[in-house]
Image 1: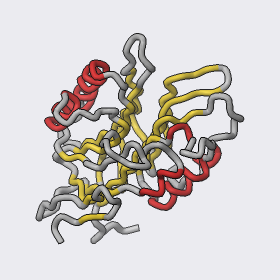
Image 2: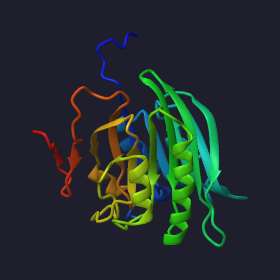
Image 3: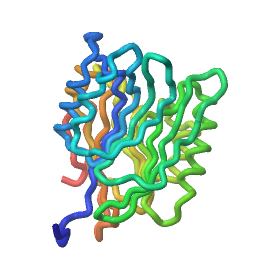
Length: 255
């Protein structure tokens, strides 16, 4: 297939799926799978994937995506299942590293780092789920800074649930210095989103073209997904990204 004349655009999606449990308190991953399939991401990060106390085939709906390459970060493993987050990609992942971001006496945390060879060029990627405590996130973001600096001029993306609600805290300051483009969508709580906990950050070598959410996700989780289209090559005329406003209506900032 020739890529001549095709814009080098990738679709990214991150979503904390709350263990597959919606506001009706029912476990139903088919709702998650249907919404993901609707948006057809090339790269997908899911947090709070939980099989504990459930049949071994409970994750079957998440195996039906057409993005077959995946890496799991199992932060909790018990006899009746596991819990953690998963990174899916349309293309094979290379040099996968699971970084332990855990702090003593707190829930275990990991970051998944990998390199993708996409049809539009290489991409350095990390999927994360940070901790709930402020000091915990401050230490974890320093580890993310080290990961972001590992690669030179390759476009870098970090995506996931940053659990950070402070407008001018260390997490946002540090990430802004390293990966200056980011989504700014309110994603939590899903029924009435007020906090931008879930984000996609991009380096200067990637252009964030469009970002949006899907309010129907409120029927399946306590978080809304964040979906973004990025270009790995700089456009001749740089544009500000499209956003969804707080009512869920997509807004273009350039008409």
